[in-house]
Image 1 (cartoon, rainbow, N blue to C red):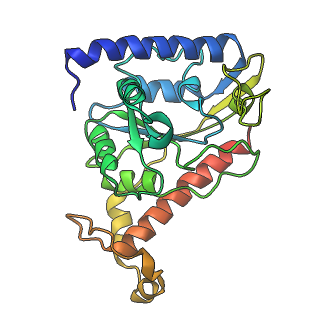
Image 2 (spheres, rainbow, N blue to C red):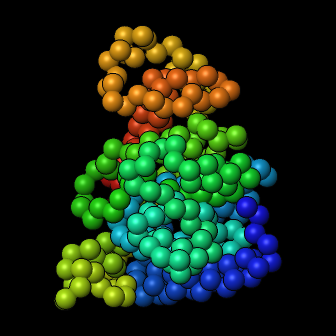
Length: 273
């Protein structure tokens, strides 16, 4: 998956253009305040070699990415440092042109409802195995309600557990992009054709979360047989995780536990918005 010259040049051009657009909208046309930005900047640009970064955030609009990276001082236009992101296949990959552009933009297609072991999750694992930066919206869909963080989908937790090198997990919560790109009817369209301006945007970067994966796996293996019998029968059939030999029930415990920790961290940030 290493990009050759035929990909690097158009990718740099596209990311530069999209990054400039994000800078204009986020840093110039709207009033954006970022808290603890130094932590994000440090992990993006100078984390230990080979250590992957997995950022997670709430999802308030179709333009959260790239706008949330457009704040002052962030290297939005640097294709080398830019994130990979999990993106909805039914929105971003509708046709061959969109697929080409979003692929250049370092987006990985995810099929809603296809489960955490779908093919493109392996691509996301390759990104993490190379020590790169991946972003995820673990709530799974856009929500513009001012409400607590919803129960997270397990795909993000599965990436943490399955990554050859456990990533640094950084929670981020933002508000205001729902005003910049509202989902409610706007004139004759479902949403405005271009982002709105003069809105208040706040982005809160949390502190890194670290997961002791070997310890978590040992605990998962002690999941009782009783709990296994109580699992819903129609959800059987997950692949055994190698080389640990984890069956479906301990996998579920792991993903539930990790997701809950991330959700709680995001909710603490949300209460500060």
